[in-house]
Amino acid sequence: MHPIRRRRFILILISLASVACAVALVLSALGENLNHFYPPQEILQGKAPEGRTIRVGGMVVKGSLKRVPSSLQLTFIITDFKADVLVKYAGILPDLFREGQGVVVVGKLLPDHVVMAEQVLAKHDEKYMPPEAAEALRRAKKI
Amino acid sequence: MFNSLFKYLSRRFHQWGSPKYFYEYASRWLPWLAFFSTMILMFGLVWGLAFAPPDYQQGDSFRIIYIHVPAASLGMSIYVFMAIASVVSWVWKIKLADMLAKSCAPLGAVFTAIALITGAIWGKPTWGTWWEWDARLTSMLILFFLYMGIIALRSAINQREIAAQATGVLALVGLINLPIIKYSVDWWNTLHQSATFKLLEKPAMPPEMWLPLLISLLGFYCLFAWLVLFYTRNEILEREAKSQWLRAQVLK
Image 1: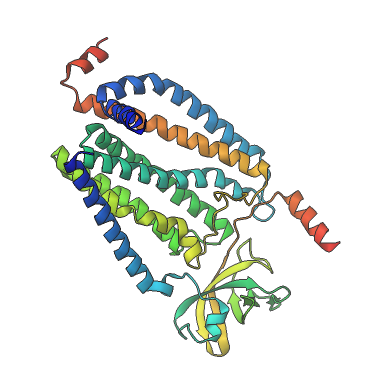
Image 2: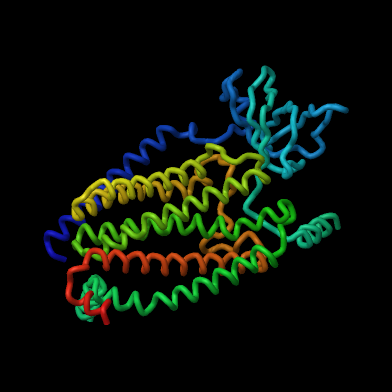
């Protein structure tokens, strides 16, 4: 390579590396603040602030969804398999909300690790399946 | 042996860097790329949107993946391509590289916008929201703003060489955002799920679902190849308007 070109090239590499270092430092300094939600375990450890709007994410425990008759009020429990958090909510759940599915709950933390939800978002994983395959899978699991 | 190979590659590199050579080849390839990208895209999209099976949970709303994933992947790939072109333009002062970089920016912005919009449309029925400030969505929005910044910066500077350098610096700095987009879903808790297609791993969906996605992906990349050649050719027409060879070509 021509010396001038090599110098330019090295200059680019050095500046790119230094910008990468700076960004890496910023990201590691921000650290957990970049997480979109708290898992239930961190709620129980008291890492989430009380009385402020936070997000909690986890799996809806099977059989935990209870509706108050003739109203939109309901409660369910979400878990990260290390800790459980009770969620109270009044409103319409997204279509994908199901027991055993991941959700992200937006709301305020009450005392006793109860979350008063303002919004419930359904999370889904990266696995897609035709209905027949899912049906076959479910049948295979039962046997 | 390596020396002769290096010489051969270097000669090719400089040959490709000549606007005349590029113009001739681009003109020859454009109709083919137009034909193939339309055919592949139509085949992939019709298969994906009409004939592929629905998802067991999301039903038909899952089908937007056949537009969302290719557009997002292209939005990121175009950025890498643009940054490489900027480096080549900077180090070797090859004009054509700068023309390529200039043509990339609006295309990348459009594909990123398509990814963001289809993502919002997909998010509403599945997650229950149009937008969430999670790491994946936010870093993708930053990518869109980077493209817009690069376009604005170029149009704000009149002198071509300075514009090439300034946008090159911005493109390079923004390159840091790409690994953040890619790994945001693994590094942090996000609402967005992690990647379905992974290198060296089986896709997390059956063949009748990923095959149309792969074809649609190929179609989108062909579409980009067609458009970028088209715009770069236009750029050559504009910048080399006074040269003899171009007159000879156009008036032929």
